[in-house]
Structures are given as structure tokens and as C-alpha cells.
Length: 180
Image 1 (cartoon, rainbow, N blue to C red):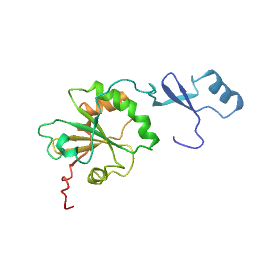
Image 2 (cartoon, rainbow, N blue to C red):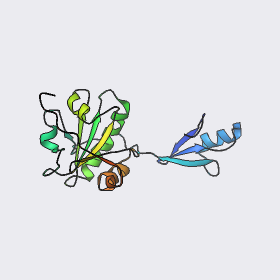
Image 3 (cartoon, one colour):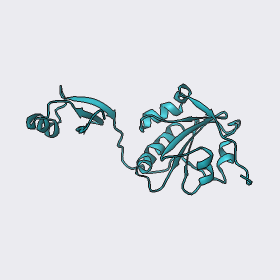
Image 4 (cartoon, one colour):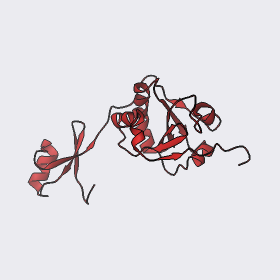
């Protein structure tokens, strides 16, 4: 969105921003006929595959299992992990869950895909400085990378399957012990 008001039409899996003159005729043609030729500019890829049904490969993490399963501090033996920190009440999280399930099946055996309820598992959320939901991180060989791309299966899969290496990384925070 570059200005207000912005009129957007979702059609054929794409979103188009209205860029014509704001006359009744042009707005009506845009809305009723889906006339995007000359007056609509493609802006965002849309993924709406509906609810996910069936079994996925998403691993449920908790504070108690996080380091044991991910070995986030080293990544030495369990491989790369994409972890979504979510809140059960978060609308964006609810919308991302079916996409995350599909990503887990695409990357099964290559990258571990997991999620953790950050509202119930506050030690892990604090450890990774989670400030908003959803927060998606790649944990790879003692480094963490924050995902900041489109929330589509294609974009997340490409990022998780090596694209993350083109983004900035930080060292994985130390695993808190029971005295912290």
C-alpha cells in the first residue's frame, strides 16, 4: 500500500491495486468485471488453498523439548529447523498454519518444520526475543535467521530450502538454565 485509500481486487490468485482515475465508471468496471487491463497493477501473490486436512509433518515444541529436539545452540545432529512462534488467538497465525503444514510436507526429510505456542512457552519466546506473532525463524548450525517474506507456501519453502542463507543471521541465544 503506497497511499490511502487503496482499492485492491483479488482475482485468479493475485491481487491488483486499482490505479485508474477514481470515477464511478472505472471503479465499477474494475470491481464488477475484474477489468485489470491498464488500470490494475499486480501487487501481491495470494495463497488461499483453504484449510489443511490430513496429517502434516509439523513438530510441536515446548519449553521442555525445544533444545533437546532442535539442538538450536549447535544444530550439530538434528539438522536445520524452521520454527514458528505463534499465539492461539492471533489471526495471522491461524491463517499461516495451513501453509506451514503444506511446507512441512514439501520439506519432510530435508528441513524440520516446527511450531511453538509462545504464550504457553514463554522461556523459549524470551530466549528468541519474540515480540510479535507469528515469528518464523530458521535455526541452522548455531545461527538464527528471521523470515520476513511473503506468507506463501512457495516463498517459505524456497527460503527454508536454502534461501535463508541470503539473509542476515545472529548467533542462537544460549539455552537458559533453571537458575535464569
